[in-house]
Image 1 (cartoon, rainbow, N blue to C red):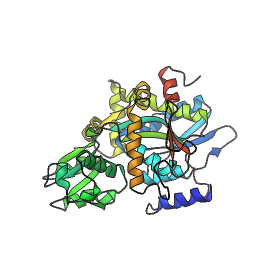
Image 2 (cartoon, rainbow, N blue to C red):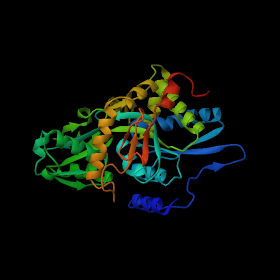
Image 3 (spheres, one colour):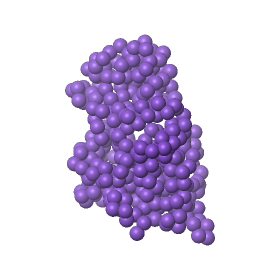
Image 4 (tube, rainbow, N blue to C red):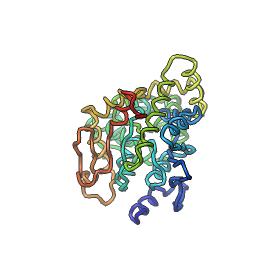
Length: 358
């Protein structure tokens, strides 16, 4: 790992309780089988990963290509991305904003293997004593700073001809979002599920803006190192979409799978089903292909990189063009000589036509 990448990772790990250990999670090599690791954190659209492990999907698809896929134990969201950014983990689930601001800006060439879902009500602004976004003027808003919650707030303000100059943003760790909101009679917070489900049910709480008003902008994705082997990319794609087929079915297998995901998520089945209703899952590969090849993805990434640069997430960069983002049509947004984030439909297309194994 280069000194610059190591320095970047140390900054990303500040406050997470993790330390940088040389060689952590590097590819394991035996006489016959290479192991490739996947990091993740608990979230409605990512709980299928644990089901895929439990149901043997990773083992099955790994054997198809003579490799082993290891799903790591879930940890907090930012630490999971930090492990991936340190080059020790081969794949990780994250949002489009964080993929750009952390691994891509940190210098790790990354590919969006497939979108898993997008937020369709899973993120929202909740207030106790106001009912509209314009009424946020002059108020304090608690959120996890520089997260997708912060992005959601910025988009809500812009859509109402406002900016952060009109409010006060206060950073609040996700562990204290609920208690802070509950304890403030004039509380205002921005958060994501499952926290959102709790705060929206607090007495006098009202959701005044949510991600249904910016559909397709907060994207949940499986991101892999661009240089990862073909076998790993194909196997991971196959395991995911086989899991999606089970999950989206109508029989007992689907019911059992969703019940297992609810248990892993730490909630009840009705709670998890409610969260699924606000999560636009890409249950089949063709939907994922259409999404990443659509016109809207470029506008979304323009919003995201503009926000990221304005918030100082591109530390040391002189413009939002510092990092290049490559799209399926071959066009590049930003620096074409420094492409570090790539939207790649090829493996999803192979899944559509049943050619992942050939």
